[in-house]
Length: 242
Ligand SMILES: Nc1nc2cc(Br)ccc2s1
Image (cartoon, rainbow, N blue to C red; front, top):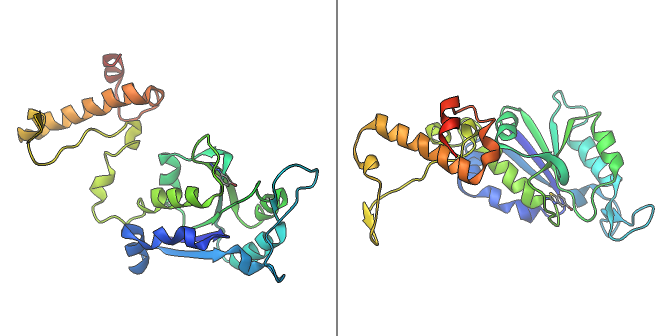
């Protein structure tokens, strides 16, 4: 998988040099490149923004640097990437979208700042890439970099070879549409709180049933909205929760 990130704050993406993502980059499993949008400007001040047409507060990101960045990275290439631009007005980013994007060969992430990117950049980019505006939630950040960090981690951890034990991906939150079950480790008793006996029983069938039940109960309590679309539950499961 190749991924490019275009930003005016490349240092914001430094955490992608760490841990599993960083190791996967060094092992060549991920080809992750970060680009400074200001490298695609030509004025002395390396200007990337200007005042909005129509008035209003704040600044808008100029189209020219984005156009040159996309020309340099994407135009003329044999393959066509998915261009993901985080924005509060985007489609919801979900585990299902992360799974789907993890199968793509090439992702380009565009980090907006200020009041946003000139709309013509999205229109122009549609000739070069599949453009998706994606939201992490109904709140506003100061820029797309934090959202890209989260999306890159969510997507890249699903790319084969990035996480050593793919088994650990199977029953985590949102797999099968349910939240994860509670986990415990040693000691068996801690400050008067004991690990549930079933987990010490060695009965893998009972343990699996207990864990499924806990996923169901936790989802019903915290995210009832997920229940009716979860693929991992039966109609009997649905009737068994309040
Ligand atoms: N929730 C989000 N807020 C923002 C703000 C800007 Br400016 C750019 C991207 C995003 S994603």
